[in-house]
Length: 130
Image (cartoon, rainbow, N blue to C red; front, top):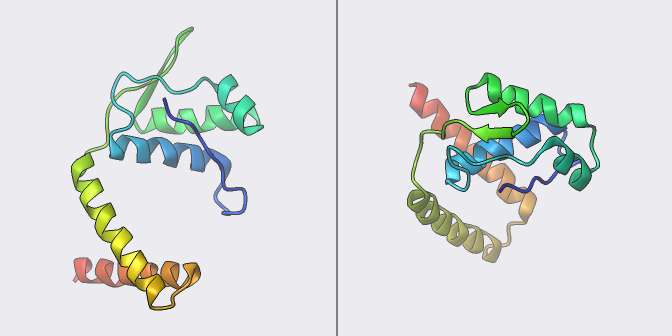
């Protein structure tokens, strides 16, 4: 089962953070069709947030067809998110970890890494459009 976390300083609304975490877990294969999401009550107790926030996130995921609410039973994953396999993620992650170690050895700090990564992603997105 997924355990939600919040970054209250991110500027991203709480319900979107929850929805994004479910989508990420689906992409990574840690959540699969048929798995149950935590109840709204469980999320409220663990994160100290408003129950309506959890329900909004679950409604958004339901609207996207990723989960379904079953009255009296809970919210369940309906379908996965198409994409690379967990093995692909693991391989790419190892490469990224090596890149981060090299960048730190070169003197880049965390903010430098964020900026550099964002620039590379933006540049590659431009290439994809062209």
